[in-house]
Image (cartoon, rainbow, N blue to C red; front, side, top):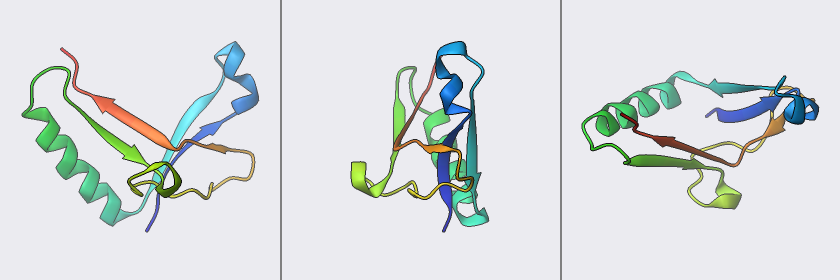
Length: 81
């Protein structure tokens, strides 16, 4: 199973030249789509949390796909207006 949220060019955080990369396999893609569909039926401000096992839920893997990337342990998706 693969689902990671990684920061590429993390050394560039202060210059805003970094980017976020998401790696996921088909099973996790389908799971994310299901969760996002549920979120779309909620009210503004509702959210979902995705976390690595060491931070809580175990939704996210902790191994990066590129050695120069930095893993993100918590992704929060919030329904906005």
